[in-house]
Image (cartoon, rainbow, N blue to C red; front, side, top):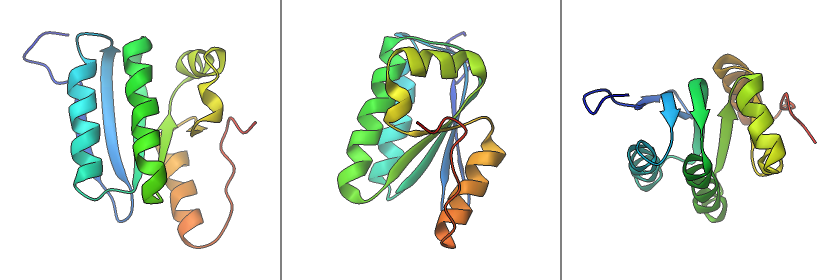
Length: 129
């Protein structure tokens, strides 16, 4: 990804802020990801969906940003949810991070679950332990 291309786009719905990531989330792009995530949380977002469905690679730097975001949201009563394909889900499983946040196969599935939780239903993540 060139310097002119952004790896993060921030989108908002009624009760969920979406961070849409693209390309490789590594030591070079993780700073942009971290800034966007912290800006989102500091701006008042309490339900954050990190959409990794267009991510081809995530390294330990990117994984660290996910964990720090989840830890920052927890005492605020918030939550971080991840949407990703099987390849990224495998990385999350191998590293044990599938227990840290809910993981869904698509953005739509994650948003449905967020709205179900808001209305009192208990939707289960694709990767429930």
